[in-house]
Image 1 (cartoon, rainbow, N blue to C red):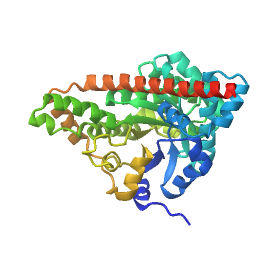
Image 2 (spheres, rainbow, N blue to C red; image 1 turned 90 degrees about the vertical axis):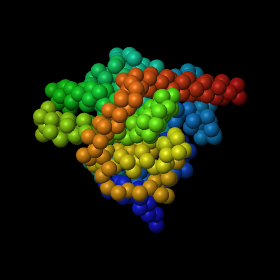
Image 3 (tube, rainbow, N blue to C red; image 1 turned 30 degrees about the vertical axis):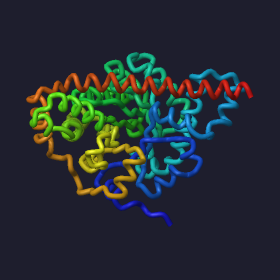
Image 4 (cartoon, rainbow, N blue to C red; image 1 turned 120 degrees about the horizontal axis):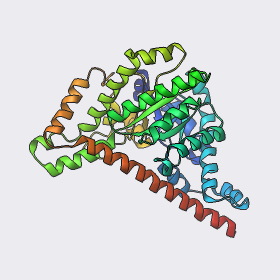
Length: 374
């Protein structure tokens, strides 16, 4: 009989939903995802174009379906859509019992709109609604980036009763705009007669990339004060984001009216939690971000590290806003322009996903061509 890993079970008991930041047909077909549910407290899955590009590029799990699609004359975009939505639908089915047991809070699988649409509100909304209909599972989340064009798309998609994972959030300022879009979307959904209790949302706040960018700038400055701040920006940023979340969802009058109508809060989700600097503890973006009503989506390597040696010591986020603001003040004092940091990271985030989408398309194109030739 399988047993849950104690460290990850402790994390879950502390109020953090453990989600896996990965999905592939191999994971689905071998039962690996179901295994992680049974032994690693996994209650959700996130995907992105990079993850799908990696899944398609290795192994032969997609070969048969690619041959069928080639025989039907499918183009690259159509093939990508079919392959990815089929995986997400199957993932939703694996996690359906968790969705039911948690009253829709967890048991979620996310799929991202085409990142090439990140700066086009109308097309983002159209594709979000299309993906929702294609997958046709109540526990799917449609990922929309928190770009300037994405924020109104988030509100409009939620207003249609569609559950949304807001991705690529780097700054507290943008997080506040996202929470406002969430409230706006639910208010419109309520007016339209949608059941608010069925609409879910998470706000994916990216963590490790903040340290990577800020540390690089601190090393250029090179003073002892600057060097002493390395590895502190990302956790401080996430803790400030949680403070903003508490303001909106614990004391906000606007939220209270929606909660009374059955709405569930938009939870902060810690994304990009794999540690990129080997000098830092490999579990730091998990153990330092433990708080009620949050999600941590981890690559399997990070999940394994937490399972092996992660120390879960209860809430490490609540009442830390003042200290976190002190870190930001110190970063500003040594010459770090955080506004520029966040703008740079958002632009790079969109570009990276566009690149991965291109790689995914090229992989599929090559496999379609190969299947057609056979």
